Structure formats: structure tokens, C-alpha cells
Length: 179
Image (cartoon, rainbow, N blue to C red; front, top):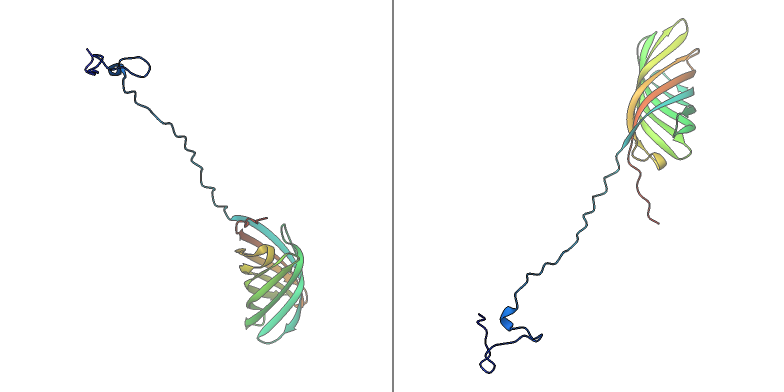
């Protein structure tokens, strides 16, 4: 029995002609679609092994310092360029010593800067070099590049040297350009 009643008609009716008490409350649900976007992962730095071959000429050779200029050819992405370095000389004997100093490698699209330590020995008028290189910064296309490596080389006259650098360099992620 319906508990709803109209005192005039004896019972209540709905606008559709149904008794009011037959209306049932139907729960309504609202579906909301949400989309979760994954955060774009930050680009990661890349590490590359680079080989550079250099033909250097000593332009200043003193008792305690030196300066070299020369051409450099490195693997991609560097290519051909120019090297300039300066160093202090520590020669404990007439047949061995070491150079320690700063270097700059100039390329068409940027520059690398760093330091080096190069030990040398002289045997039968041939100078043999071996040491380390540390790249501390770059400019242009090579901004943020850092790394280190080894250096080897020879010279038949102490003025003209052939050097090979094997470097492991860390390249920062490329920055997005906005148009």
C-alpha cells in the first residue's frame, strides 16, 4: 500500500499518471574520464669516445715554459680545427720531464678548454710523450662538454710533434628550441 495520499483523491499521482509512491529514487552516476599524461623524461647526457690527431709546432721553448700551436683533426662531431696550449716545464733530468698547462681546441662550431699533463722522455734524439687531458668546458655547439682522456705522441726534433688524444667526453642534453 502506498503511504502517499492526496486527501482529495485518496491517493497522490505523479505527473505521468503513476502513483507518487511508485516513484523510486534511482541513484545516478556521473562518469568522468581523466587522462594522465606521463611526464616527459628529461633528456640524458651522452658519452662519446673521441680521437684527435694533432700536428703541433713549439712556438716558444724556454727553460721553464712553452707554447704550441697546430692543427687538430677529431672524430665527429668536432672535425678539423686548431690547438693552442701553454705549459710550464719541469725537467728533472736532461732526458725526461713533464709539461703541465692549459689548452684550447678551436673548431668551426665551438671551442673546448681544459688542462693537460704530459710526461716526456728523450732517447736517441726522439721525444716520446704520454699523459692525460682534462676537458673542463666548451662553447658554442660544445657548451657544457666535459671529460678526460690520454695523450701520446712523438717528436723527432723537439719542435714538431705529432700527438694523439683519446678522450671520453660527456655531452649535455640538447636544449629544445622554441619557434
